[in-house]
Length: 176
Image 1 (spheres, rainbow, N blue to C red):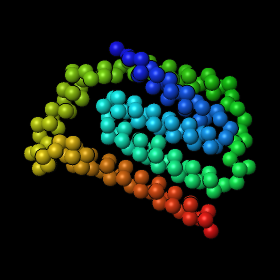
Image 2 (image 1 turned 90 degrees about the vertical axis):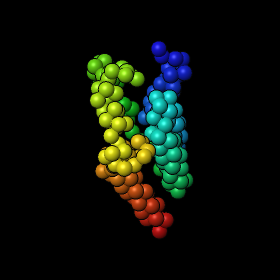
Image 3 (image 1 turned 120 degrees about the vertical axis):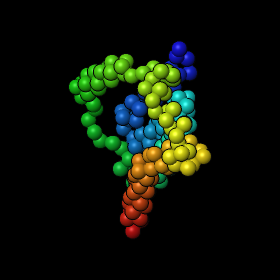
Image 4 (image 1 turned 30 degrees about the vertical axis):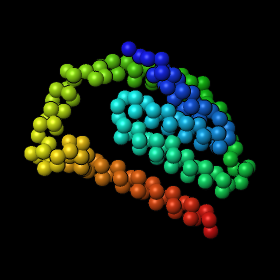
């Protein structure tokens, strides 16, 4: 059953995403993207992915918005206006069709919180029953993130580190 606040969050997410694409002012686009990240963090929390929600709130709604605003404050006002043509009619046809195709494909996915889904039947019991024997780590979440998915976690950390270094280099270059 879909609740009213879930529909409201989805609508807010769609409106802020469309607004960030359609506005002509970079300051408005940055604020809309920050709002988008905040609403997305709320959706992740609603879905039970609190760790992803926390990262989205900190990095997306917080850090990225602050860095974008700092960059905009360092530019001339004439450079903050976007000069681009409006989206073409093809864009308004192709992307909704792509959305419909994605929704059609999502029908084949297992239902949310289905105890008989392949992940619940095959993968989760293995992690819960064998994680301590495999990793010698008493916390199952830590064993999954740091042992089973350690390479993935390391690459994600490297990407965030590289983005931070790139921002620092860009801000340092513009200060000279």
